[in-house]
Length: 291
Image (cartoon, rainbow, N blue to C red; front, side, top):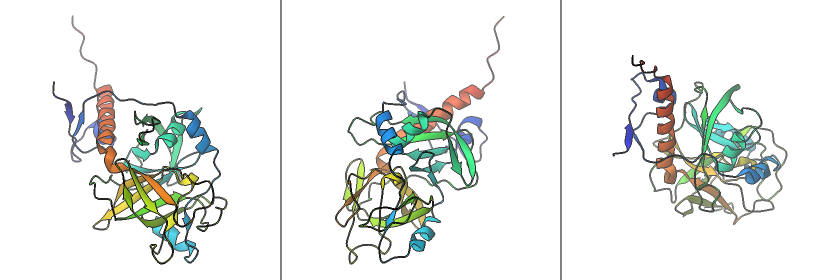
């Protein structure tokens, strides 16, 4: 049997898929795996000190905060870390942050423009936690976040050498020094993709002469936050910030690692498409009983 196909158009009224903010054709060939055991990693991230994007010592913190205002789809998550709105009801983040949302004692809510949005369900990539680099999760909101515009994911595989803008929430701090206490404000930094692997993008921290004007370094509290590539001045979600592997302050020569979002386009399509089908099925009236 051919895989089930779903196509939703923006100008067409459909409770399930349109309410989910899904508009492209997808194939749904296999069942989904939801929540692998990532509790230990999620707990470690939740306990990490609050900190965020660190900046160049010769640049003003206000420049980084101003740049972040262009990327309003980046959202801070409860308990730390960040994600990004890729459709009106869908937040993309890394697996450990998704697990933290799913394992809370009460129903979690993500604050978006001052309004809490309840998380209805969370999907974790089935290969997350297996050492394969599939560190990605999707959270479905109970209602659409209508006050900000979602950012679509980046699908081409030409990330190498491109400028990428990563967004985190917290203090400024200076590269080379220990991060300071979080202030919860968004900052964005511009780095260059220096290395591309099948599932990971990497950027090397450079010295002042080689770095971008707004180079930045991630910290543990930035994990899950988005990194954008712009095409014709329009942003696309190309990466998700992974927790740093270093133990001390960020320094020239260190590497920032991102989930390569283009590698997970099919999985993202599958999750969103299946969720739309399930919700649409629930909304259908029951079949008349036979007499």
